[in-house]
Length: 226
Image (cartoon, rainbow, N blue to C red; front, side, top):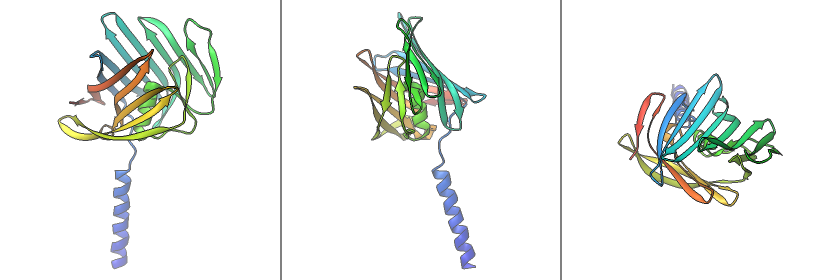
């Protein structure tokens, strides 16, 4: 009797551990609204359908218009990018096309470059979703591109947690930092929101941009931060 009780207790304990450590899952659709450190609104739409994903980031403010689109395939919690396009002021600026171990990339007014890689290549926004859903873990030999260059990512550092109010409930967000060449990119994720990026900080053309999540819809569920 005691043995049976003990076995049942162990099984229950294992089930609780499994539930607690269950990996986050990517949403089917998310419409997120950020504001950058200059007060400019930024929209990010994530969607997946038929094993394909699309991330569409847009910044539109008076005469300042940026659009970044990342597409690829998705299997479980793994994003495999196929293309990335950076459009500015309505004109193509830079791009990257991924084909197995070959990446074609470059600015649109320059000759295309080709690089052989031995691991996955992400743009900054796709990397944010991949890192968030995998709790800051990177696959071996991961690369990052902005369409102009390819950067090998050797390390990502966990730099701590900070409190954030989401739907009037205080929760901890996890912060990570990585090097992109001589620049630093930082991400913050909310485990309570399946690891979606709630903050992204990066440098572009010598300027630092930090996107803070303010509100959105995740699979139809409204969120709001303070």
